[in-house]
Image (cartoon, rainbow, N blue to C red; front, top):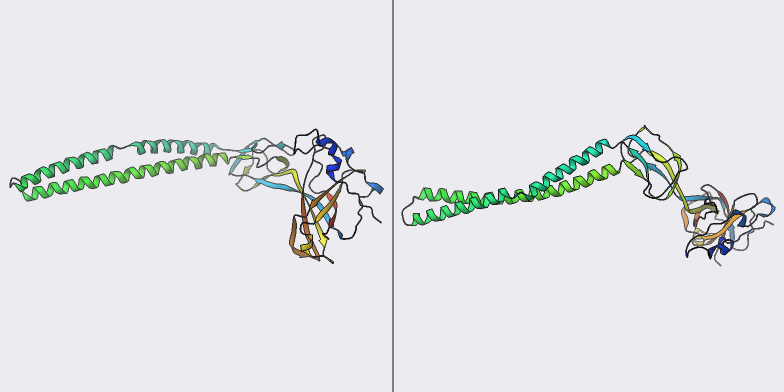
Length: 317
């Protein structure tokens, strides 16, 4: 009969927790991991337990990083194996045109600010209207006394109305200048964003596992340049035969996981099923569970992407 060795990770590392800050995951030595008996990671299946097939450890955060602008790569700050923090500049694409566009946007904004503050047309229109109105009112009094002609009075009234319309036009022009200022603000913001896109930054803490493009190469936005991974959070993915069990019974079920770390040690822990695939293939269903990774005393992650694992799922009674 196969013997299943499962020792919770918290028991393995309990002697180290007291030296860590509350909530911190302490490093662990490989020598502290439980031994493997009979040179095999074996599995004992009890009542209500199912042995999963083809169990694999996978990193949750593993992506391809793509260029975010067109141009020639003028600076590479990282290479395969480089460990970076979120926000670190990893690659710089030629940004001369983007810098020039930014300077143009700054000057356009400065010009828009000047026009927005300009009130000369409105002031002149207001004074012209006041003058035309006063002249018309004076002439109207003369007309009533018979000292001014009808045509002359009508002409002055028309000039006053025209001056009033010029105020409306000046107000519309002022509103347009205010809108132009807002447009210039947004154009400057867009230019800054375009310039920032010439620098590819790390989206999260992680490690470069492959550099796809090199210094001096021309790239287009959307083309992959790095493969990037972070091993802080992992998942175990396996396929479970559905003979005598339904997918619903697997949801939130306990999962016992063991991973061979060396010829004599294994990593053993427990987790809950977090996902059961709605698709069934060849009588099996894909099941996954999340589990936090942990570093050894040398600062290396214990679990790696692609490791195989033994998994037993414990069904609720």
